[in-house]
Structures are given as structure tokens and as C-alpha cells.
Image 1 (cartoon, rainbow, N blue to C red):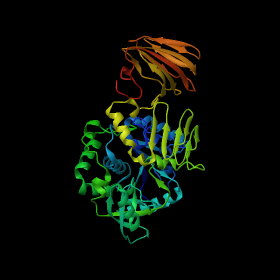
Image 2: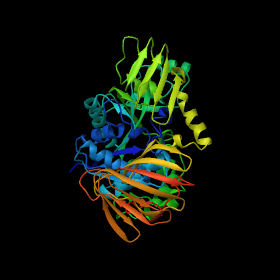
Image 3: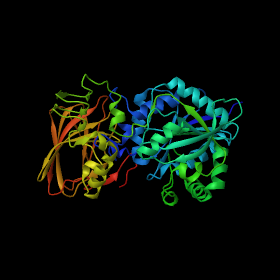
Image 4: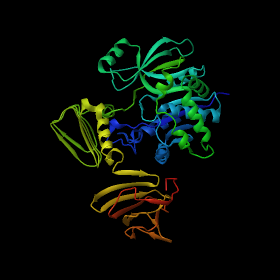
Length: 478
């Protein structure tokens, strides 16, 4: 009987270089690409389609759970999805430790793990599946396997792996991994490309649960011990599994490369060429769009006159550009990025500055995803805010009250069940209701279609932290 095979999706990438499309509350894996799919959906479909997949395990922050679940449902695969939810991000060393502990408990030490970042794009999935089969063969021989991408350019945005001698055995292409190198400067990247023994580090790994746990015991035992303590303290009888917060907070923020791969002595590399990209910055995303005759890559409603070699994206309205060259222009409802292409790797500086100033656009889009649906801020000013609220069928907002604002609700489509105090009423399209400040209330969609309504808030303080939750079916803090 063959060992269980468990693809593991790490859905933790922040994607700050892809602001303003990628933001903290809805980061890069959830970005919708020009083909209408998200990177996360592509990763899930790819993992689910691999032969002998037992289930697809996703490790992510708890706040992303409902969005993850919706993305996987929309992806349409029938593979079983399970989740390990982190209280906060802790990089890949902790995530790999928890994945191995989960697999060992569920399937035994011989279970084979395939670690996959959620935010990478792979064009040739057949070639990828062949590389995974080679990696699994090596993993059965207790190798810790990394995937090295044959470089096509002197890329400074990727880490590198220096390959050594071929490894004898069934996988003829496999080579020993001699060294992991950080993202290089341009001159070093050119040297790596010329030498020919350096490969891009894809951040993909394959090993058995027993092999990686044994290696962590030898080379980063402190991390493993803290992960084991957290695992022991976690209630694993519930789905999804939420990792215990207090012991989780003790884990260091460090990558599996630093913690283990750079130290271990039995690392194999499988060379790969399957159209891989981590979509780390705007130029990588721009390559998904065919250029026009002037080298411009246009996405959305864009008018480009006398422009050259620019990437221009608009989400909701017309963007007109005249006589620009080598620019990145990304327009969203509440934020616009204009940058020279040479500064694409430095967009994260914009996010850092916005965070330092406490600007909401670093964290939230104008449309904010919630477990029950979404809301979009249409307009706001002194003492008022107008939102469009969409509640999914069968979903409900928390039972809550606000100290500083009243709310007027007008139903546009669907049916609303509204509880105000102890009284429930149904509100239909073109009908409205009013909730005064301090009044306990709940909004629910009892129907089979989306409930769409307009909310007008009035008051002296209109921020989201003026919500006192009394009861919430999604387990959010009260």
C-alpha cells in the first residue's frame, strides 16, 4: 500500500509589491488575474489534480478562512480541503512543522508532503506533475527535495539554489543542492546565469513527514519543540483546526530555508522548466497580457495614446494615458499607483509608508470581504458613510450594536430578515428600516439569492471598531 500524498498550500504571501490590488486584508493569493481566476484557485486546482492526492491541506491566517473556503468552492474541484488556521503569520518554518505534524497524526510518518505557495503561477501543469512525481520518488528515499527553476534571465527578485553533482538513482535529472542564495544584485544575478549551475528557488518542497520532522529535530529543534507544544495544546477534534494562540505566539518568524534547508545535508534538487513565476511584482503580472503594437499591456477600460512599453490597469472606470513611456499605472476605486517600471520592486515602500501613517488603503480595499458577504464604501463625509452591502444566501451579520452611529437600510434586491431589539421583520426590495444608535440588531438573508442593500450611517464616529458583537456565528471576537 502506497503512502498517503498530501499537497500543502501555504496561503500567507503579503504581495506588497502588487499594491494597490494586493492588500493585507485580501493579499496576493486572492487577486483576480486577467483570466478571471485567482492564484489561489489555480494552486488548489493544480494540487487537487495531482495523482493520489489524499486531501489538500491549506495553512493560512484565521481571518482568511471564509474567503479561502469561497475560493475553493468557486474552483469547482471535488478534492477534500482541510485547513490549519494560524492566529497570525509566522513564515514557512512554523507552517511546514505543523503540516508535518498533521500528516504524521493523520497518515503516519511515511506520508508524503508537497509544499506549495498559494501565490505562484505555473503554465505547464503537465510538466509540473512530472516534476512532482520525481520529487516524490526522492522523498521516499528520505531526501528533502527542493524544486529549482531553470533561469531564463538574470532575475534579481528571486532567491537561487546552486546545484551540485547528479544524484544516482531513478531520477536521473536530480542534483544535490549545495547552497541557497538570497536575492542577488544585478551583477551577481548575471554571474549566476552565466555559470549555469544556479536555479531559481521556487519555494516548493517535497518530503515525508518523518524525514522533515527528523531533520528539524537535528537542525532547528527549538522551532519544532514550540510547534509540538502548540500542536498538543490545539483542539484537533474540530474543523477547521485553529492553532492554539498562546503557544503559537512563541514561534519565531523565520523561513524554512533559513531554519532548515540551508543547514540540512541531504537536500536534493529537481530541475524544472514549467513556466513558473511567483508574480512578485507588476512586470511579472503584466506578462500575462499580450502587448499592443507599442509594447503597452492594457487591462480594463484603458485608452493609451502615443504611449510606449507601459502597463496600465483600471478596475472600474476609464483611464486615459497620453505620451507616457515605461510606466506602471494601476487604478482602483480608492487608490492609484503611478511608478516607473524600474521601481517595480520598490512598491512595497509605498505600503510601508501608508502603514506608518495609519492609512486604511494599505490594509483594506473599498470593497471589503466578510464571512457573510461583502460591503463597498460608496461615499463618505463628515458624519455620514454610504455602503452597498451584499449578504450571501443563508448568511447573517453578527448580533450587534453601535454606540455612535445610527443606520438606515434600503433593500435593493433579495429578502432581508431584520432583528431590532426583540422584534424580527422582513424587509423587501424598495422597503427600508432604521436602527438607532445603541439598539441591538442583526441582518440576515433567509433567501436563495444574494441580498443587496444600501446602508446609510449617520453619527459622530463611523469606524468599524464601533461594533459591539453579542453573538456571531463565524466566531469573530465579541
